[in-house]
Amino acid sequence: MSRRAKRNQAFLPFYLEESRVTVAKGDLHPSELAEAWGGREGRHLRRNLGQVATPPDVARVMARWVSAGQPQAVLDPAVGVGNLLLACKALCPTAKLIGIEREESTIAQAERSAPEGTRLLLGDYMKCRLEPVQAIIANPPYVKAHHLDYTEDEWRFFESVLGLSLDRLSNLYALFILKIWHDLLPGGRAAVIVPAEFLNANFGEPLKQWILQVMRPAGIAVFDPSFSVFENALTTSCIFFVQKGANDAPVLVCRAGGIGDVERFLEHLCSGSPVAPAGLPCWDASEWDPSEKWLNRILGLRRDNLDGTPLKIGDYFRSSRGIATGANEFFVLPMKEIERRKMLLRDFSPCVARSSYARGLVFSVADFNALKESGKRCLLLNPAGPPGPAMERYLDEGRRQGISNRHLPSHRPVWYAPENRPAADVWVGVFSREQLKCILNAARVKNLTCFHALYARDARPGLPELVTIFLNSTIGKAAFHQVNRFYGDGLYKLEPKDVEAIPCPELPGLTEREAEWLREEMARIGSFAAKERIEVIDRLARRLFGSVGEQARQGSGVELDMAS
Image (cartoon, rainbow, N blue to C red; front, side):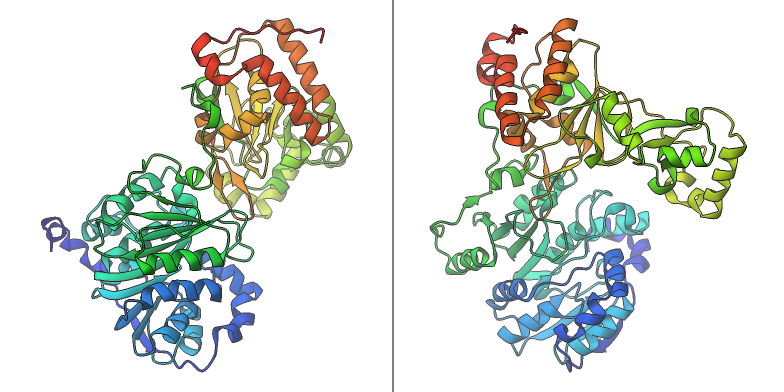
């Protein structure tokens, strides 16, 4: 035991959690539990616990890797109903099987559906101290940091055992990766499927550094975002193929369009051939920078012609998330509801509550009025003073409904008063697919969490218009792909700091008259069909920004021909 571990022996009770041990009967196939596992109650439970069943074809690929070492024992630290161990049983029938599960009703199902003779431990894997094993196969639970209930003492003991500092913002699956490595015997193998978001996320940087310096996996197969591994789960996935102790070998990464590509990649890893399989995109990640967004590199989303500028959106704009109410159905009302209840319009702020409510390049006063007249929820509760009788009656309804006790309202100084945020200059969509959604907020209305808010750092004319043109252009799309995060089914996500990190050209100085002309031109372009809109925006972007690389060398002077 290390000196640090000895100093932390006071935390041992937190780590040595007693576990109930049972033995599986194996009288049911996991597929026969589909109704209980997939029913409404089961789905709700799994969502809270971060559990997603592993598809059989994925389980077989993972089992092939861990079984190739002919292990005497195989551990699944998040066993669920036993899919992964069932795949291992078919390939190494004499191996002892061990499964750990922290939820009682799930392990009760596993007692019937896991392979016969599997030892099942009821407990939290992070708190189970085990003898090292030869093989581990896992689909760790996805639980965000703010839902983890570990005490600081538990975090500190995890650190002493694992031998490194842990980011308290880490997802539970990241902790599983670290402990799985710790619990492997030298030469042992592990196959672990996890969301690939950490390859681009800020919290993933120390994990990537540890992967390169310590874990050194034989291979990482990253699924293309267009391929959904898990049904109804919007996440991009990757599989780690690990052999403990092979520190001199390259860290091979492949982009997989489906299970067939992963099978070919696995054959290559098992063969030990130094030549990557033809037609399969592969890289040696041994020298990659942990601070880089690896998913962008893997998916071929490079800086292209943005290499010539060191500037970022954050040099011109501050980005923040939209207003979070905690109960949009209560805090955001349609005009007719306000009138029916005889509340005062002064106690409400115009807002956009859904991304679909704003289209085009410019959101105007006329656009907001159209929302209001169509009966959309677009007025945010924001009392201007002490509540009047009508408002007080409405607030009493909220109290009776428990709105005031919900997490966000209960943590505000006044539970019904929204976050005090001014209207943004520009809105940037949180989620997108092919094209980033970026809209000039000409109406000066507030936005909820469907958009991130951009606020210009200075009052120079035209900055909001210029950044809106840039982010809607083809080169802006390439810049967006330097920072975006990936979900499943081709869905992208941005965090506020990601928006600030988007590389951009120098934004030229405009006069008030030029800025007004540009705004009017954008409103006109916004009504075009998608293909024509992009073509016109790109022409305008070339006039405004020119070649980015050349601009970086020669400056960014621009003259707008407002007659054209």
